Length: 222
Image 1 (cartoon, helix red, strand yellow):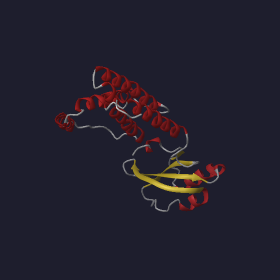
Image 2 (tube, rainbow, N blue to C red):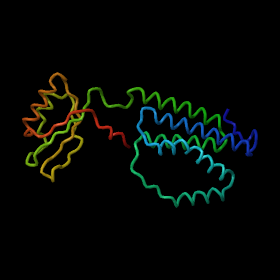
Image 3 (cartoon, rainbow, N blue to C red):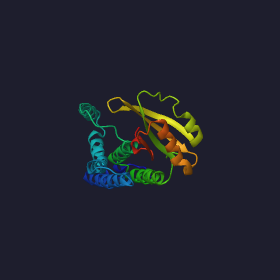
Image 4 (cartoon, rainbow, N blue to C red):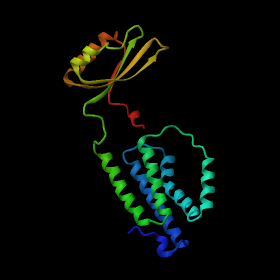
């Protein structure tokens, strides 16, 4: 099943065209899987679709030639990639496309198709289910307090009364350092007492801004 196409028809023009076509089709499939329930730029989607073809072309060039492989490795080592940190899903999709390009470049078209089908189905299935998502009912709470208050243990009694789970995620200064913004990850025990909980926080922080909502999507990073 995994026998190389080269062993059957040689590394000629027909095999090159066949592998290139397979890379293009599977690259479009990888991009489609990534774009499912994901907001992305067009440039990243196009790059993801063409990445298998580019990797496959490099593999064709270095196939069976040690000298060419070393030359290509040296050329790629001169390239410096500068970009903002991507999400875990973006990095996983890039490796997904590269693996398909490696398989088609070596002529294992059947393996590339099976790999795409299995991994693509797994990615779609895990995206649809709640695997890896925060626990049900967990929210993000941002509380602003004056700089003269010590935030350590400031709301512990309120969290013990109203929240079943609480974790301080980060602290940052605002308004030229005159205020602190505390970011918590909490799970309110009784949603009917949510307003009462916020009222108690307002009394404690001097009626400064309080934000309670869903967990920030920016946490989807490595």
